[in-house]
Length: 271
Image 1: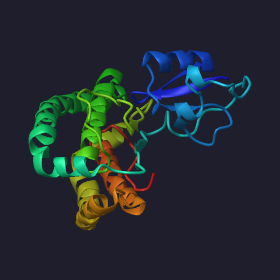
Image 2 (image 1 turned 120 degrees about the vertical axis):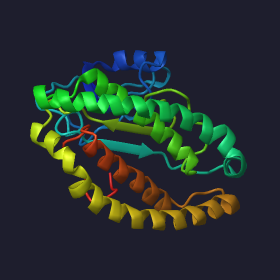
Image 3 (image 1 turned 90 degrees about the vertical axis):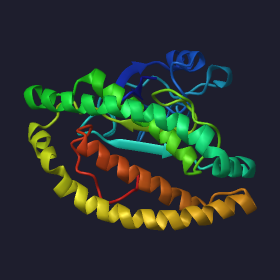
Image 4 (image 1 turned 180 degrees about the vertical axis):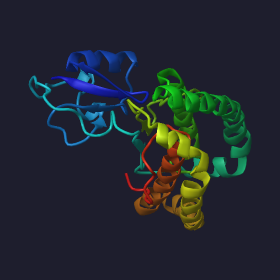
């Protein structure tokens, strides 16, 4: 079976099922890495395509790739965010994050991400000139910037109680139920690059207004969900989807303004 993977904003492959099983076993590929082969309607977590070696029982036969994968690994920079909704949530971790999270969860990660944010600002400036003169966002810089945002989202999911567990330190996806993928456009638009100078007007104003009201709603739902987890151990699925949608919407706005994507962000938080 010819399988493509989506790693660090790039489509790689194809690989055989056996190769991917070996990559899963070695940790080179995480269970949340997105995969695709001819016949799949959309990109799917790799463990839903290839079972780990210890549990492998066979799979589809060899497939000849004639077309291309869905619009994830190419185009104008799609933003794909998934935050797992758990069956049950820990009341103890909820209380610990609420009353002591500032010391062990917020400050150490926030300091690291703040320093990396300074580096991102310089990278974005370099990328602006690179796109203006070459029409391409440098691949190495793109991978670095996306990997920092992957760390940030992993941390944000815990701070906002959308997932239990402690977020791993380090850039990139860490295979812990939170995945963010942003595709690197093969060609970035010089016109969009120049327009970014005015993005605060035609992107910032309308989206910030919409997100302001969504965040108010999200704040209310966050309080309701906090008590729901405390008394029932469950985070209502609809509320979880709404909160993840807020993060996804904000990421799409960020991706456009910082030239990671040439897609004007939709007024929606849906996948």
